[in-house]
Image 1 (tube, rainbow, N blue to C red):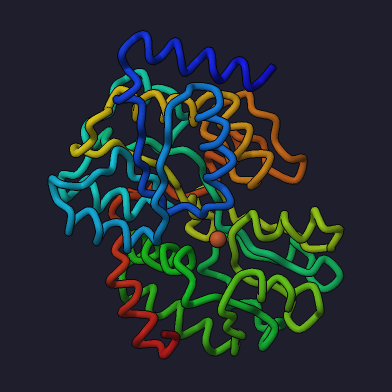
Image 2 (cartoon, rainbow, N blue to C red):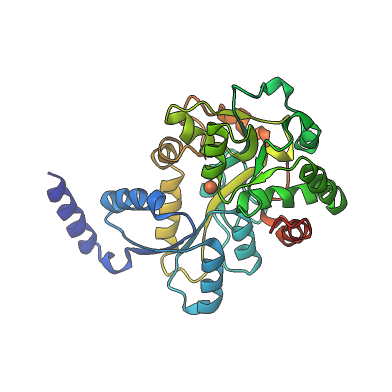
Length: 327
Ligand SMILES: [Fe+2]
């Protein structure tokens, strides 16, 4: 049945004379494991051929720069709002239509040149056998006051989301206060981990008691039956920074209408449910069924600080981390 349907679709498209135009090229900073099932489903439903080139956000920005007007890319699907902000600042994106930008519950940039697709939240992971959430502070600024956990706090200075959080601290509190926070934290002798899964494992095994991470890392362990708690600071605190992923349509696109269709599909209930169910990120559409360990969407949207996600001063953050000897 399925084969017959696909054949019918192909014939229908051909008869409309659109067959040649129905190809989409995506440059994806998001991983293949996440993107491929979605792309396959989109292809099966629409008959549109999709080519995906994978890389880090930085590699894709460099490729787009190098290719210039010759780029075959229709879409840049990025892991970070910072990369999308950089692309829009370089004039690589077209402005998106209202039909797309009105869909998300929040996080749409003022430029309207890209659209958020999912949100991850910074949060504290902790061992519930050793940490009472009521003993944790309302702000990440006060984390250094937890002297009882000296030597038992973890962090991930080389990880991009941690660095984004430091950059957001610079925006909110200034460079001097952020430098001071790093010094205060260092006095607690935190253990540095190369990755979040490694830090989660250290919390699980009792090597440390808590650490600032991204919400989905805790959920992976919880889904595997492990006891790892998730703590959020007070609403608006930088320790709950929202990490926004999204995509924009490139000026080089020869198929902007098809690219538009793909974005609408990612923002549809079906696309958004995939992100919530399969990768436990927050959707940007209301009415999606969330994992019971996730916060209701209305609450999640208010957790992080109101900062310009496109323009976090990452260079300053990296400088401070280097000065502190953490990079
Ligand atoms: Fe991650």
